[in-house]
Picture 1 (cartoon, helix red, strand yellow):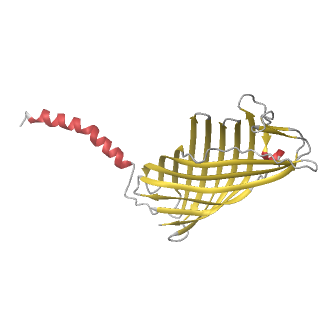
Picture 2 (tube, helix red, strand yellow; picture 1 turned 60 degrees about the vertical axis):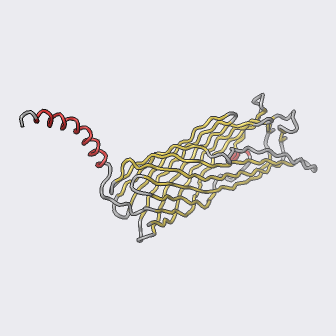
Picture 3 (cartoon, helix red, strand yellow; picture 1 turned 135 degrees about the horizontal axis):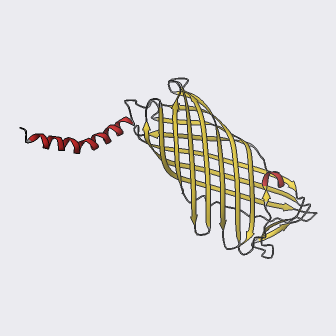
Length: 287
């Protein structure tokens, strides 16, 4: 029997690290079964502030004018749009998320200076908006996000998760101008290549104040450089939700979005920087 003691001791020492790993893994979760296996948020995105600058150059020289769309072209600086978010949770570790909203803004103004768009020496690659011209501008922004999140910590009181996803986005800016009695219709478009799904990294968490009240934060980062396309986007949300009824609740929050894009084709090179700050108000359906 004495000869078996060293073997038993060695076996215990070998199993100790594995036991610790399982204990640590179990400690990240409890017997809490999420009450929100499925959640759908439907509400308004009250964008209180747009700050958008754009520049269109020739592919050879940086001769385009830097344009502040809200200040120079009088494009709407605020807007309220329909927004839909949600997720489906397979278990307390794995889930899929989604977001959709669309923005349409426009504005008219009289040019207080000359604006160079692209290369004015190339009729197909640019033009000049002269002082005194009447400018009409349209801004279109569509966003669809689909992602996966892994909750590496999920308990009744709190949750932390990381994830990745696809950011399917389209940005278009159309500029037209008129001058004197003759109409010159010129337009160009900056397109963020929204038909291509772009990868996004996500980190976030949840904190339950009570059985009814919870706060949620989420930060997303997108970075990409492929060929003639470079871009980045940062998206931050802070939400406060109340589970008012068994399957229905309400929420408020803040959302900031920073977009930076650089792209070019055979004729023109475009730059776009945009900052969006808005409030979220919504109804949630969950079960």
